Image (cartoon, rainbow, N blue to C red):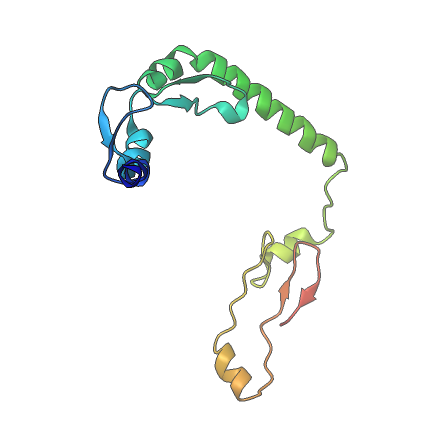
Length: 149
């Protein structure tokens, strides 16, 4: 009888009632998948990252989102405002304007914004042949260094 009892506690085919309360009987091995879609399962509001603490049944989530859209919008506004203020404090200096910006931007080797992605054609072949080669010159950023690789 001990063997039978221990088997029932680990058997993936053993039927169990849904713990969320939907009154369905689900195999133990399928429970995780069932709970991911069960309408009675409690889920956090998708706006929890901006401060909505509601935990509701999955079946009521759309109603919650509809009923609380103004509250969610207010929380989003507060969050965005906070981020904006933090950014403005950290970027309080005037942005650097390079003296020859127009000239730099008119050059074909000028890249508008870092990060740069530079592809070196035939890298493996050149490395195996131990050859030296250089890229076309480019600027690291507006007013930055002119360099070759």
